[in-house]
Amino acid sequence: MSDATESLSRRDLHTEQELAQGKATRLLIMGPQGSGKGTQAARLAEKFAIPTISTGDIFRANIKGGTDLGRLAQEYINRGDLVPDEVTDAMVKSRLSEADVADGFILDGYPRNAAQVTALDGVLADLGWHLDGVIELTANRDELMTRMAKRAHIEGRDDDTPEAIARRLDIYAEQTAPLLAAYSQRDLVVQVDGTGDIDQVTARIVEGLAAQLG
Ligand code: ADP
Image 1 (cartoon, rainbow, N blue to C red):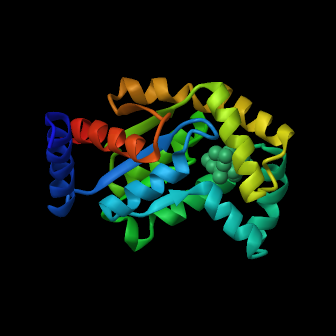
Image 2: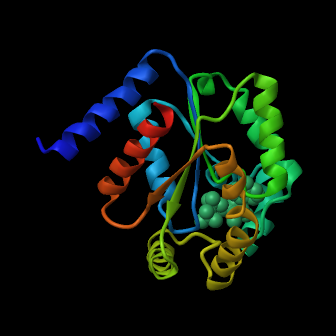
Image 3: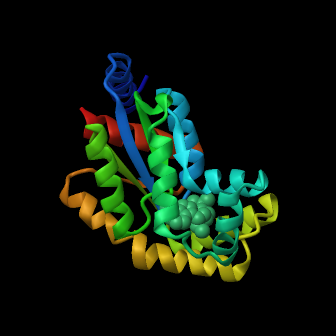
C-alpha cells in the first residue's frame, strides 16, 4: 500500500469510527449542475449509512406521484426556476423531522439561496443540531456543459432543455455560489475538485471530510 493510499484509508477509518461511535454527521453538498453532486451524495450516504435528502428528487417523486406539491412545483422546475422558498423550506423541515435523519444526513440541492440558509439555520437550531461540513464540488464550465448534455440524452429530464439548463446555471452562479462564502466564514467548506474518475472524486471528498470532521 502506498503512503498516500495508507494515509487516506486511515483517515477514512477515522471518519467511519466517529460515525460508528454515534457521532451524527450533518452535511451539505453544493456545486453547479453537472458537478456530480447527486452521484457523490449517493455514494457518501451509502458509505456513512446516512440518508441523502435531495430536494430535486423529492420534487420529482411528487411530480411522478401526481401530488399537490408535485403539481405546484412542476412549472417552476420545467422552466429551471426555483420552487418558492416557503414550499421548499416546509418540505425540508418536514423531512428533517423524520426518524432516519437523527444520525446524520447529506442535504443535496438545499439551501440554494440566502433565505434558505436562514431557514435551514432555524430548523437546525430548533432541533439542537449544527452542520459539520459543506462539500463544494468544483468543475469548469466546459466540463459541466459536456456532462449536462450527456445526462440530458440519457435521463430525458423535462428540465434538461437548453433554456432550463442555462437558467439553472445562472441561478446557481447568482444565488447559490455566494452562499459558499458565508459557509466558509463558518469554517465549514471542504472544496473538492469534481473532475476525473468518480471513485477518485469520492476518495477526495472522504479525505477532505476526515480533515474537516477530525
Ligand atoms: P439540478 O441541480 O440539476 O438543477 P436538482 O434535481 O437539484 O437539479 O433540482 C431540480 C429543480 O428542482 C430545480 O431546478 C428547482 O426547480 C427545484 N429545486 C431543487 N432544489 C430546490 C431548492 N432548494 N429551492 C427551490 N427549488 C429547488
